[in-house]
Length: 131
Ligand code: SF4
Image (cartoon, helix red, strand yellow):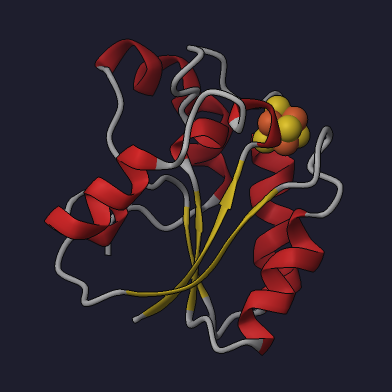
């Protein structure tokens, strides 16, 4: 599956997306059971995720068959602070790319504490988890 990854701009200064790429390599998290090819990695564009939808759409034009919203946005890694706009951001991306494109609501797993805190903001959005 060809994938476009959207990540948090605020975490870019500390995180080189290492855990996302590790999850891809090891076929874990959102990448379980998939053969992936990365079309591109881009940030949300800054609060409040102002470019996420546009960038996701662009990745789809470049061949992405799925968009992964990274765990820094939805689960709050590595700062233990999920994006306050995560639900809206995810929904906006989903609307922008349309029904034929899968949208994953996390990239790699996170500590249970973060999953619990973040789940209220994303689970209700109807996001796809896993495959
Ligand atoms: S909108 Fe969310 S994902 Fe984007 S920079 Fe701000 S906190 Fe990070």
